[in-house]
Length: 313
Ligand code: NDP
Image (cartoon, rainbow, N blue to C red; front, side, top):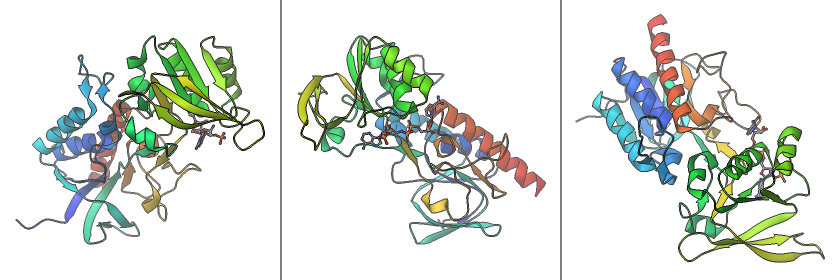
């Protein structure tokens, strides 16, 4: 069957935001096309168990949750495809979006739901223990570390927030900070420094992780490159990265207004971007909450915004 490359609604991104947009848009008869990128299912596929997505009282694995959302979108007719957006032209409507440098899709509206990518240190051990003690989301995975010892890397608000959250579950939390100070807001700093079971390791970098199957500890170095350089190990069960997220917005930069960190700026209390007819949903426009359920919520809003836009134009 010949592939149709025109749609009333093109959804870019196959995470909870994109699939929720697809469910709403297909039920509104917009016959959406959705492109999943290089990581189909998005960040959730790197999580093992999801226990905070409403409707799953017994929890659900990240990949299963994404499979359920994908099946629900497909059931109402969403055309789900694989491919990466390599170029966009938002100068005039209908918009043109290029996939894999070869296929042009023409779309009356576009919903950008490309998510954000957690930053990692770049250690080979992070990959080795991914899902086996390494995580970039304390809210998602903290529950598995009740009464255990964990480390959080980073010195910003996210790191402090994650350390504080984990300190209510774990018996001991190390906060590994590469500088001699925290970058986080003063109030977060004092909360962390006042919390009895959080130990802040300033001037410290991680060089590796160790453990039989799961993470059992981290190799650290203090005062790297100075005459006070000291190598030591800590015993931990979990290693949480909180060194920022990079929103996946590079390809949209020429057209879409972004904030200093690269997140899409929304207009008023809507999911509209600065370009009429182009909407955004999920982590790509959310430096603050970054939860699967909040991404799904904004995916719903973006589809409703797109539907109303089409009715008005
Ligand atoms: P930030 O960019 O603010 O902080 C990143 C932290 O990670 C910094 O301490 C940085 O160190 C450290 N870091 C970066 N790379 C490395 C590395 N390779 N090795 C070790 N450490 C590293 O990111 P956040 O996610 O914390 O915050 C993003 C934005 O969201 C901020 O504006 C923040 O204020 C906001 N936010 C607000 C919250 C709230 O108001 N409740 C909650 C969470 C976030 P260094 O300082 O040395 O550069």
